[in-house]
Every structure is written in C-alpha cells, then in structure tokens.
Amino acid sequence: MRVSEVHAAESVAYLNRALVRLQDIWEEIGIPEEQRLQRTNDVHKHIKGLLDLMIAEEEELKKRLLKSIESYRLELNNLCTELQLPPFEDEDGCTMLQVEKNSRTRLEVLKERKKQRMEELDGLVAKDRELCDIMCTTPFCIDHNSVPSTQQLESFQAYLADLTKEKNRRHDEFVGIKKEIIVCMDDLEQLPETSFETDVMCEDEEAFCLSNDNIAALKLLLSQLQERKAENELYCSGLRTKIQALWERLQIPQEEREGFSEHMLTSKKKNIEALQVEFQRLEVLKMHSMKSVIEAIRAEIALLWERCFYSKEQQQIFAPYHDDDFTEDLLNLHEAEIKTLKKYYEDHKELFEGVSKWQNNWTLYLELDRKANDPARFNNRGGNLLKEEKQRTDLQKSLPKLEKVLKAQIDAWEQEHDKEFMVNGQKFLEYVQQQWNHHHEEKEKEKLERQMKKTKQTQEDMLYGTAVRTPSKRRIAGTPTPGKVRKFNGTSTISTPNSFLSSGLGGTMCQSIQKPPLSASKGLGLRTPGHGKTPRALDRNKENISHLNRNTPSATLRETSRRLLNQM
Image (tube, rainbow, N blue to C red):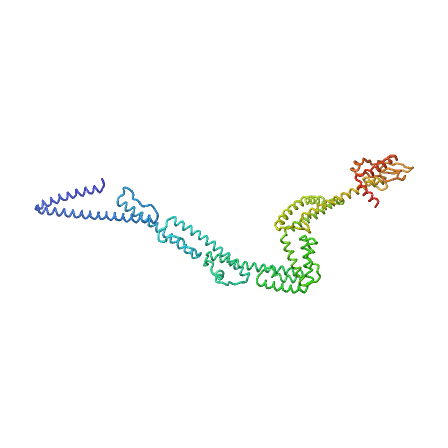
C-alpha cells in the first residue's frame, strides 16, 4: 500500500474520532439535539468545503499540466520540423508529471540546438558576405530566417572553405602580378595612366577587389606591358646587333666600345635613346668608309658561303660581290645578301652543322689513314701510334652512322621544303659517295705504285744483285767479321753467307743478291743463290732470271716496270 493511501486512511480514522469526540463534548455540555444537528452540519460543510477546495485546486493543477504538455508537444513538433528531426514521442506508462518534465527537458534541448545552428548560420553568412564583397561573387543560397539542417551547414562550410582558398589564390596571384607590373613599369619608366592602374599600384592589397574581371584585367595589363617591354628589348637587340656589326666593320677601338657598354645590357628609355644616337653616328661613319665596310661585309659573305657549302656557281650568282664601284646601292645589296645568307644558315643550321661535323671527321680520318700508311710512323716513341689507330678505327665506324643520320634529316628536310639539299653544288649523299670513291681510288693507286716499286726492286735485285746487310753486333774497329773466306785468283775475300761470285757478270767480285719477297718466291719458284755456288750455278741463275722476265704477273705491270727502269 502506498504511503499516501495510509495517510488517507489515518485521516478518515482521525475524522471519525474527531466527530465522536465532538458528540461526547456536546453530550457533556448538554447541547440539545437540534443544536447538535446544526453543529454537525457546520462541521460537514466545513470539511466538505475544504475538501472541495482542495479537489478544485488539484483539478486545476491537472488542467495546467495537460495544457503544458500540449503546448510542449506543439513546440516540440515545430522544432523537430525546423531541425529536420523525427517527431517526439512520449514513453509508455509515464504519468502526467513525467510526460510534462520529459517534454519540457526535450524542448529546452531542441531550443538550444536551434540557437546554436542559427548562431552558426549567422557567422557563416557574415563570412560569406565578406568574401563576396572582396571577390564580387554571389552569396550562398540559403534561407537566413529558417533553421538550417546539419547537411546545409556542412555544405555552407565547405563552400566557404573553397571560396577562401580561391580568395587566397587570387590574392597570391594578384600580389605576383602586381610585382611583375611594378617591375615592367619601372623598366619602361612609365607611370600609372588609368584609375585601374592607379588602384593596382597604390591601393592596399587587402582592399583590392579580387573579382574575375579584375584578375583578367590585371593579366591583360601585364601582358601589354610585357609585350611593350619585349618590343623594346627586341628593338634594342636589333640596334645592338647592328651597332656591333658596324663596330667590327668600322674597326671602332675597344676603349670606345667599353665606354658604351652600359647601354648594351638594359633596354630602358635612356638606353634606347643612346642606342639610336650611336647607330646614327655609326651610319654616318659607314657612309664615309664605304669601301672598308663593303670589304668587311664581303669577308662575312665568304665565311657564310663556306658555312653554307655554296658551290662556285652559287657564289657567282651574286654578281655585286665582284663590283669595285663602292656606292651606297652596292652596300645595300651586300647587306641584303648577308641578311639572306644568315637567315638561310639559321634555318638549316642543324643540317649544316651535321655536314660540317662529317667533313671534319672525314678530314681527320684521311689524315690518320695517311699516317697509318707512312713507314716513318714506327719511329714514334711517344705512344701516339696506338691512339691514332684507335681513333682511325672509331672514325671508320662512326662516319657511316653519321651519314645515315644525315640522310634521314636531309630526306625529311627535302620532303618538307620540296627541293634538294645541295652541298658544294651537288646532293650531299652524292658528295659523300664521291669522297669515298676518290679515297678508294687513291688507295688502289697507292697499292699499285707499291706493287710496281716492289716488282722493280725485285727485277733490279735479280739483274744486279743487292748487298744484304746481315744484322750483327757492332764490333771493335779492325776486327774482321766472321764469315767464310774464299780465294779467287789467288786473292782471299771475306763474304757474307748470302754472297757469291759471278764470273759471267765480268769476272770481278759482285754484290750479293737479296732474297725476293715470299710471295714472289712462291709464285715463280725462285731460289736465292747461296754462298759457295759454282759458275754453273750462276748460269742456272741467269736462266731463272730470264724465266722471271717471261712470267711476271701481268703484261701491263711488266711494261710499266720496264719504262720506269729506262727512265732511271
């Protein structure tokens, strides 16, 4: 049993005891029945009124609770709708007070959440408005009066984060472009002319509107300044090139050139004016030194002809080169020609450098090949022989590779320009093949001359004999060289092992005959006369000589050798 029910039972019991006590008192006093009844009615009325008052108050409390609960529920439903939350539901088995308390607590929580969201929204809106003012963009689309959802706030925050990054990027871009604009204006010695240029140069960087239009206008302004600066630099570069060319042609002293060096580096307004004055001064000097200037240009033209591999026929086309009437018109023709040649060389520089590389390598290869065939190379004690041979071998391998690369480049160039690439008046590959053919012909010619010389030497050896020096150690003067001593006509003679006497050639002592080369010995079946041969052996040797004359390798070679012998 509840405590309240116990208290109620005690109250009822007390009320009964109180009424009994009142009856006793009234009995003792002797109050009549009618007065007792009246007094009992008064007690009843008093108790009933008191209880009715209490019941009314509690009923009013119940109504207030029900009204509060209804009001809380209504507010909760509205807040759940605004906050995009599920509807609030009462727990089962709860009393009115519990329902009222739960509703009131939940309502306070949702109100606080609404307040936080609205404060966050206000902060985001303020930041968005600030960024929009700086970047001239459209504000974020969101209702400022309604409660935003969590997703809307996150989307708003992400948008502002991206917008802040874009603002920082534009600010950095603006600062960088502004610095470049300041540098360009300083180089051009130019002051701000428009209000926009003034804002860029003078306004605070943080206050500048970073709109897309302003950034585009900044880039356009920078490009215009850079273009103007590039035009000035190009103009100055042209003047410097002309001035340097005139300095060389007019042979201006180095001291005078160095005094003008400060204007040869920068391209500001004062430099342009100084370059113009110097160029005009040199033009006047050029007119007074026409002959020397034209001769200097002709030297440059000759150098360009050589670089461009012009043939004699191509050089003869420029007839003013040989004109001796040194006038301004002749100078203009020469300047136009050298300008054309320079452009022609620059347009085909890669090909000309490749051809020049091949020509240098070819010249070096011929020089090394000539040294390789020089017998005197063996006298080299510096160790260069192996280096030169290795270099010659490398060139022999690299030349065809370079020719292959040049062929591909020339084919592409000819296909692009629809004309032939000429070197010294002929196609490059034909020129290369001609050089190789000439080289091979020279090699064959040298080989033939060596064979003829060798044949001639062999014939002379067979006819007249050649003293053969036997390698031996150097002995003390007066010491006879060991050898076999033979006596002829009572005279003692010292001879080498390969010497012999031929009485058939005059009856006097003859020189020994040198052995012919191994190739000749194998082909002709000859034997070198040894020492101790008899005159009969000498006769047989004469027959071998006549046999050699009849069986030379070719009739042409034999006839050539005879003519050479007759000339000697």
